[in-house]
Length: 488
Figure: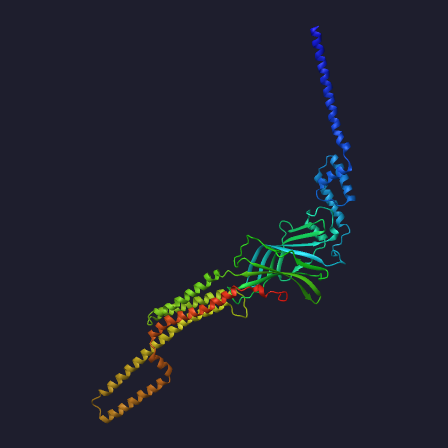
């Protein structure tokens, strides 16, 4: 009896266990089917909107896209793949019937193109060719109502730059460009974004060589104003207007280091340019470049000043040491001349005198004057020696005449008068050189050297007192004050 009850209990246990397993399996199957039956159209749209993101082209087309996405999802397709197809379909719809030959809103107000520039590198100037180079991002933004689509205002659609060829873009060109290129390594360096309200942002990386009419009167303490000027080539002001984004439309790379100039200052200008074909909108950004003159001071001014001072050492050399003084003066003259020629070769040939030309010329005059001073001293020494020799010969002749004892008194007197007349005629010949004679008699050669030791440095210091304040005053002036809409 006890054994039977134990077998029956085991049977009941297995039956209950099997029933529980069957019940749990049926619940799982029902759980898979319930969400599909409870999904409505609104939930489908929500799910699809979450997949697509911020884009909702329009109610009719989105319904088609969402149905397609829902069917693909149920078939196990990748939602990102479906989103790509939706974006491609949207771009096709936007470009359908789009005519890039016609500007946006052709019968309406002019297209406003907001421009900004980010300077990557540049400002390397070449004074000999009057130009400078620049690498920058040129950014333009305008509104094209034909490209509107529904979406969040903060959303932007980044597309392949190849689409630029299918859209209307502003015909901007650089008026003072000598050479330039749009970078294409490794791909064409352009970025294109389209916003839901129809705004289009076009950014491109370009390298430009731009003309810069430099004023080198105060070189190397000069301040240059170099411009980047942009205009519309074909659209007049009634069709297109350029404007700067804001007061800070020009941004310069903080890591940019310029070899010749200090950090540039920037000023922007909007104006209209009038030609025979009409009035065109234009933008200008002016860069104020203050040259770092310390380099030229160390490489030019200090060496030349040193050679000028060296030329004054000849005033302390004995005048009789002609080879030493001549060699020193000629060496300094040739050195200063060579430095002056090297500096001029790096600068353009202009019709005015530059500050560095004035400096080199004055220094060359001082060095040459040192050589001229020794020529005067040497002449005085030679003239004094010649006159001393002449006086000595004259005295010898007189002594010889007075020592003649075997001659008669009259003959002696006649001969003496003849010799006196001969000496007087020599004196008359010397009067033809009155100035030279007076200098030779009244100027001491060694005193000339002593005076030169004081006069030359004083004159050079006076020149510097006038030279440097004038140059530095020009260096510290503000050339932007002269830039106006009419002075361009």
